[in-house]
Image (tube, rainbow, N blue to C red; front, side):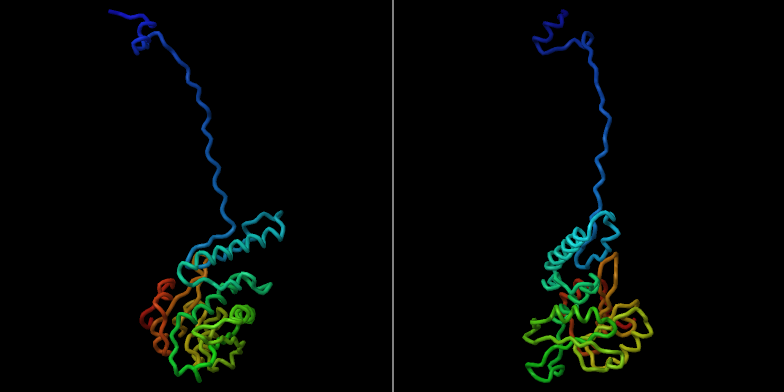
Amino acid sequence: MRMDAAAARRVGMVDHTRLSWTVHFRPFRRAPKARALPATVSSPGFAIRPMHRQLKPSMNRGLRRSFAGWVLASLAVLCAGVGLMPPARAQSAVPGVPLERRVKAAFLYKFLGYTDFPASAFADATAPLTIGVIGADDLAVELARVVAGRTVNNRTIEVRELRESDAAARVHLLFVGGSDPQRVARIVHQALGAMLVVTECDNGLQLGSVINFRIVDERVRFDVALDAAERNGIKLSSRLLTVANRVQKGAQ
């Protein structure tokens, strides 16, 4: 028994031989690619990609400052999770100090709180923690501003700008700026009065420092030498080691 089209529609059947249709295709449009952010931030390191390379020349200086503020705010949020958040004052730094220097200054301040110095390192219970800086005057100025009015383990903090001839001065933390390995090695070997020695040159740990800053994927990171820390009579917190780029456990 055959049904006509009208009867087929009434019972839910369709006679395909009597039907036809037209399909219109619209051209497929690719979604626009997302634009890259002006700077990359990733914990635990700090992004330092120069933002002027990411912005169009037509953008004014005020807009660039706003991006810089956004970067620093992002750093604070990301680093809070690992306990190494730079102090809030780092967000209103001394004008003209590069972002990389500001980040390293904040790290130096935080390193003190994750280092156990022996009692013999202090003259008495009220003696301050002393940071010496050689070869990085801009960082010393920024660091002095960061630590002003702050304490670590109930001790105030003093920042001293030193020269190479002062390398043997008694300080708790000594930062040696510069990338010349021969100069850095000479200063580190003379730094008999320093316990936590921090450098920023290639192979800094092999030159004798305890912590060495590195730029890894445009981020400020740091390596740690446990043998140098033990040799200098200090203990580093496991929390600090957790966020280090590399931990050296023996002489290399």
